[in-house]
Amino acid sequence: MHGRALALATGLKVARPDLTVIATGGDGDGFSIGGNHFLHTCRRNPDMTYIVMDNQVYGMTKGQASPTTGPNWEKGKLTPRWHRVSTRSSPLVIALASGANFIARTSSSDSNGTARVIMEAIRHPGFSMVQILSPCVTFRPEQREWKNILIPAPMEATSDPAQAARRLLTDEGLYTGILYVGDRPAYQPKLESSIDNIAELDEEFRAMSGSIKGPTRTIASAEELLAYSLALETEAVERFNDLADQMEMHHNYEVADLFRKLAKIEGLHIENVNRASAGKQLPSLLAWEFEWDGGESPEGGAMEDAHYLMQPWHAIELAMHG
Image (cartoon, rainbow, N blue to C red; front, side, top):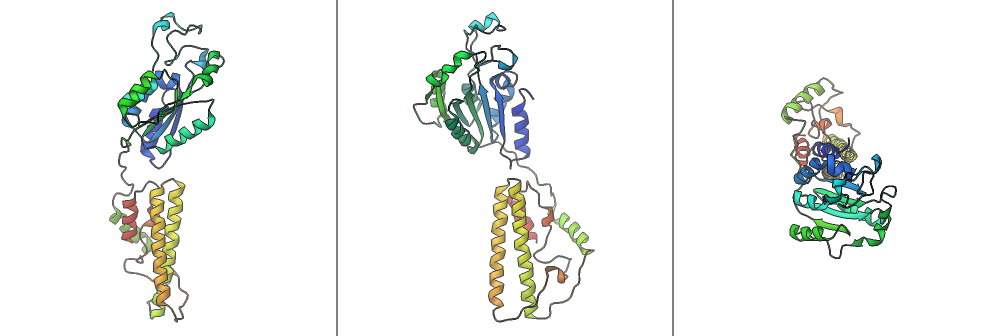
């Protein structure tokens, strides 16, 4: 999707906020045909990372000047003469002016430094842009000298847009490192849960489960009550841990952590029951051996309908409903 990477990546991040989204491109597709998407992605500030390999030439199509090619470059056979007086695009300046939240420049000759910057870009909330100066030795052999003239930025990254603008407008594209770190909140619309009415869903679930009943009987003693409590709490611990595993699989770590905490709380309940059971001989009971009014035990509920995009409030509501 030449030039459309940011549009697709933004849609993916909005629909799947649990994912780490990284888009890649070059100076040609990113700042020419994709220039409008670049501007508006900076403006929207979604929590994603854009890595641009910039060699200042259309290397795949025989060496035309790209948006970042200097104004006096005349070596490209397909470069129109008017390019001798045209100005180059300054993508980092444009990114800053358009609202990007993290701006950095690195060089492909510094693989370790580039890896570190990309890691910081991914971790920083909001739209992060990393420009990687990547020589095209076929059509721009003079770029081999980049590794000798690029220098680390003499100052730490700033959160002041005005200071960052002065630096980016005067560095002649030679400073490398993290140049700007903003604090704008990332764009992420609130996603509605796929379960619109928990009460209605639970009623439907109860109706379904009511037709699948195992052996039922009444609790006849304190020992049976304690044994059944252990069965219910043990099942709850397993269920919450299973749900946490599912959430982690989909990178929904906030809800996964919540389910782990709920599992620990159920574990505390088990400890309480064990203390109350000291000195008693408990029978062996299973969680489904007793029928409760409405068909579900106090530790039940519609947990099977947990969704990988569920928010913490939704997880709590499902747990509380049970």
